[in-house]
Image 1 (cartoon, rainbow over the protein chains, first blue to last red):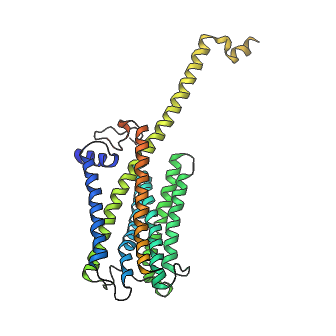
Image 2 (cartoon, rainbow over the protein chains, first blue to last red; image 1 turned 30 degrees about the vertical axis):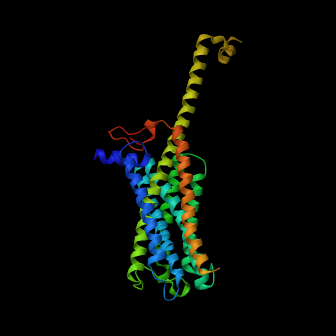
Image 3 (cartoon, rainbow over the protein chains, first blue to last red; image 1 turned 90 degrees about the vertical axis):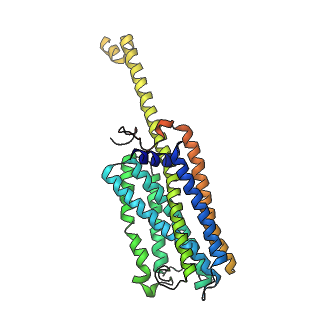
Length: 272
Length: 56
């Protein structure tokens, strides 16, 4: 157990230790995974009967969409844990995973628009429930990140952010199921994974790509968490230093007053 | 825009955004690590004592 905790600790902080090789290995696995996925996507898989080569966008579009969902779900779970246990680490995990989820969400919209233009004849359609609901989801979490940037008491700020993260997560099933619930109000196809229309190698490449992106999410979240933790500690140290400085100044003032009571304004007042 | 351009933009956007983000995170981490003592850079200690700043 201790070893596991130590490994996790070092993974998160990058301190010297066996865990560093763990994160390094994960990073190398991600890199190799991306190379394999790209090779399969561009050289091994066949073009789609209908879309032709455009189907190759699917190998990044679907994984980043799932990555964004996972980022938001992890963020909501970590936020729930924060509200329950008041653990600063949980709050920082939420921040890290949601930040990456937002990036992945923006990339989902961008790659979807780039795919949509040659396929549907338009980059964007405001009447499309999938597109608009995804945009709303991303904007909700952009709001979460903006809320974190607002100054004030760190504890109440973390509490407010956690509530927003949890409430925003209720949008995820709406986005996910929008293509099934409002079939006549979207150009978007149903799930590529479950509609059973993908050939073996295409499906394998897509599943591999999703796996590699999820591993990348874990690795990237670990890196981002480490940064968040260091910034948290830096701010704590800054606050601690400021308090210590004020205390030292106050103590010096008291000592000076004891040594020379005539300089004390109150003493002067009583003398007068 | 040709199909090849659409595919290239989609892939490069994903690689580029995550690449830039990763470099930014690593650089900021390096800078922040210089300001935090090693004993406080761990988010969890291995013994029963919580790290300063963690709830007891």
